Image (cartoon, rainbow, N blue to C red; front, side, top):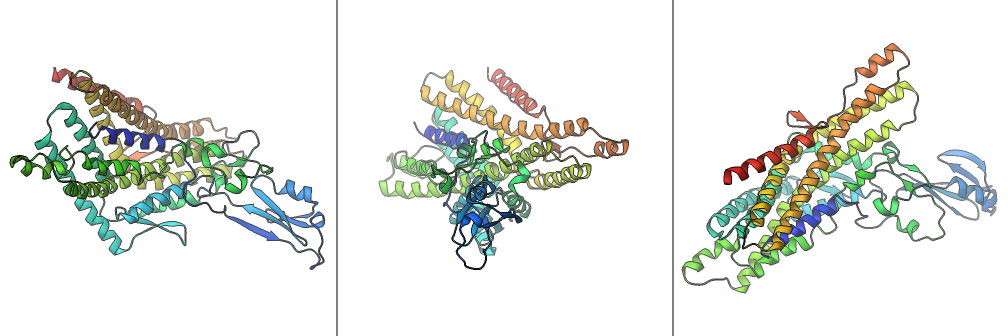
Length: 491
């Protein structure tokens, strides 16, 4: 199957990345605070006569049943001989219900092990911070090695490609490597991206529409329940209903980041010793001239481990910059806007201040992704889509290509197309929804109407352009036109 299996595994990772996020990392308690109210010294008064502080507000005497009712939803309670404990859980975007910080920590952990990211996770402050000078120098060294590795892949394809199937497989694998290089192409750590991630994972949950509800149970599906709640059959705690549904759909899953994909990439060398663009295809050239056709097993093993490390160097940064920063940023804006539209606040000044806060967040997101991340995505995704469409058609019309390869490349084409449409659609809806809110706002005075109409719409920018409602259709039309034009020229 040559390197086709690598594309299939990569497609599986991308599919999981666009599916619901899972609860990753070590299980721990949800952040909370405990208010203890002693009763009459240490007289052993039972919980039926305990005094309770509810949301930092004194609520008077409660029975045990009253304490249970007051502590319902996101709160739990425990009874002691002299006091009633009300555990107030502070939900935010980094809590166990969302697992955003879990997936981010997992990716940064691999990035620190293989020295391929400029940032790392600080366990003391629970924030993303830049590495020290030594760590950043190692990351720069890995980028330079990545450049030479990409050049060697081009040489391997030019000198060792024998047929159509082998060539297109090698080109697609090389493009994955080049995409990872394009996403990580920076000389120093980007402080704006770090600030954006820290802001997202620490924003209070109530600002993105989290509320208590007994109507829908999406917690286990989207966020993964806390073990103390999920395993307690007698728990009467209400589950969380989140308005951040597709936000968590877009959260990448890095639980198998160091698993099958990288191991398969490296272990291919144990079976294939001169298939481009693998490095052994270059090393075997002198052997072919001397009459030998393969490398020894120890040499294959060494090259397999080298390719394993290289696969980490281009896949981890690609997943971090594209599937973590880019997707987190765009989906975060969309969720914030949806929560803002459903805000029940009737006070005019409060709504205006909330919208201006979203404008500041929009500026932060644009500063983090417009210069490189979304710009690279906007160019690489259509290019990959066009190339995959041509490959599928060429392989389908070829008589010496197995049907499995055609299906594998067709599935890769579907995944790339859907991800391109999804990202641009969500980004375009942000601008459209903000314009509609300004247009449909019911002002109570002419002065209020003028202030609202002066508000600039939110928009996701890349380079000197921005994404609007019709951008996904324009991109797909461009891809179809280019594929058709190329096929006509090839005839």
